Length: 402
Image (cartoon, rainbow, N blue to C red):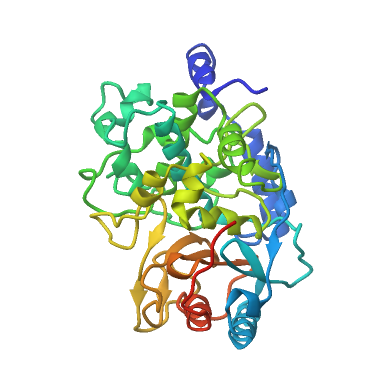
């Protein structure tokens, strides 16, 4: 069992900080390997990450249904599959009311092939906050961050409420020194994400604006929330994920990158897992009363997560909600703010969004969940296509989760 983050924080006062060392051997090793492989964040193989923490699961079988049994037109499935294949996808899964209706893999992948969901992982962090509030480990989202980040106890940054961090409206800088998403060893965020301490850079972030007002998608903010969860619960993040979501949902074992042996996992990204298991994660937003009754994530919290935030109506608590950027010229690649050629046909779409077009689409009005995975850039991504094709091809009658 690893030393908890809280204990590590206490030990830090009597040990030389990793950031102060002349050479970070983990960073040098990872950087050299990244360069030698010619990898970008999207193309890193899942077995490249070392060390990793195990997220113990308790895999349970999935129920299956034919398109006809699920009330989805086979022609809609065919159209969705053709488009997904043309977009360099490695997996496409369609489920209705918890039953797998269509499951297709490409590029040598299969059901048990792990993939990197990238920032879809952030939604799990928000779900875990809900479980911590339900257990009394966190009082509420109005608590100032200094309640758990003691390093900011006498700092204005410590007054940022947890709610503003969940909204991605913390007012904290990106901390990239202007490099943005450039993969260069001079980028402080690259050094941070490949280095031996996923927490040291976080505590140096400057506040550049008031919190709660401006939407600014920030990976470091999610990692701060991960620190809050560890310190509030006294458990490692991967243990929380395993005990509170992975095992109760009946998911297969997964992995998460560690900064170093005995350190902390990367909460903002990279829960290396099976695409099919995101059907059940997305399914938490369906039939919420039944899910809540099983004690996984509280019903009220799921509803709060998908309420639009003041800074950007298309975002809730670490999850994208409703229509995003509609129309105009298609941006290159897959932009940070999701782009769609037309509005969603469904009255409500909840989207888990990951770098390179990793997607979980949830349409509660018809009990639909769609998963798309990839390890290469799509040809011409459009977030409206898969949800609308499946929505229009599905009957109005919604089934019942068993």
